[in-house]
Image (cartoon, rainbow, N blue to C red; front, side, top):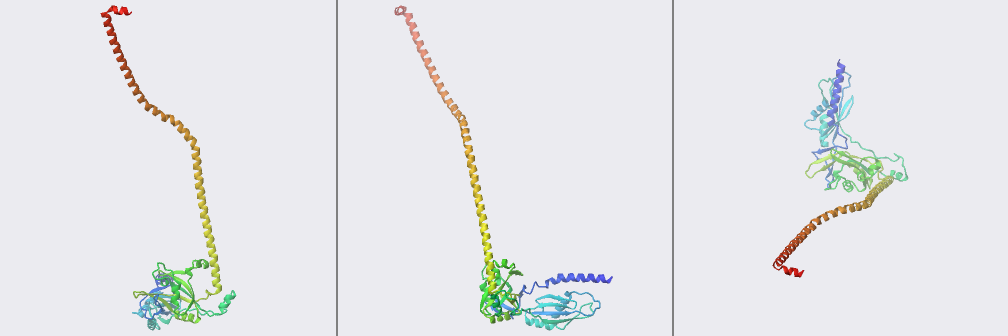
Length: 416
């Protein structure tokens, strides 16, 4: 009955650690941006860009687990971390993350503001004993300075040369540095709306170590991402980052730059006095980025991509021209059909107009009819008036004739 209960407790503790320790695990050493509260150990890199180098202050903390095989109660890494924090109180780490956990030890990686503070924390932790409730055996703490990871110089004959130019390059001393995680905004021109880095600013910043021969920011080449199939930028807590290659004219300047950048963080100090620091990845350029062969290959690939782009543009122009011609032909065909309909409709329209003409004249005759009838009535009235006058004149003459006959009948007979 006790074994299943212990298994259940272990599962719950595992889930508990995965949830709570998520905030303690940084996304990566090269992608962390933090606020700087103590910049006393920072050294100037470029005053014009307000850039400084701040030492990385890290401490490796190993908590040794008991070796006996006696059953003990399960405990979480969170409990151990709480005990470590209580040992260094009132001091504290800037960030803490779980580095490794085995059956023999638990390893934490803590970072502080300054290296002097790291030494204080180391003195407080190293050799101390942690006691956890329910455990018979105490846990011992071993604190050591964290050793920064560093690439070794490439040796001659490490890789076979592909051509004569690369063989000649292998005989030369290393002189190129590869950077990763540089914030774009910190290397962008002041007052610019975008956040693209500037090669000239990058050159000015790192020429403090010596004369620079070549600078290359792959992000600024629109064809590079297609050529390599990679992404030359990223995001670090809201800051877009980029990678770059720098080649010094002298190997001594290259060595000076590498030694100066070793174990350092890049810090930006604002006009208000506030500062931000980010971890950047600095390593020897093992890809021979500035060799004649590499430059020739990039130029050839770029020319191929430019030719492909020109072909795509030409195809697009041809398609647009073909579409324009199709529309023009459709417009002409539509106009032709319209004119044909007008031609076919012409005789019908003339016949329709001829048929409509008598109907149109009928109202004019009927309009004239009232005028002619009115004149005719007036004429009839005049004729009637003349007839009446003629009858009156005839009646008067007849009356006079009757009177004359009555008075002198013989005159009428003589006349006959």
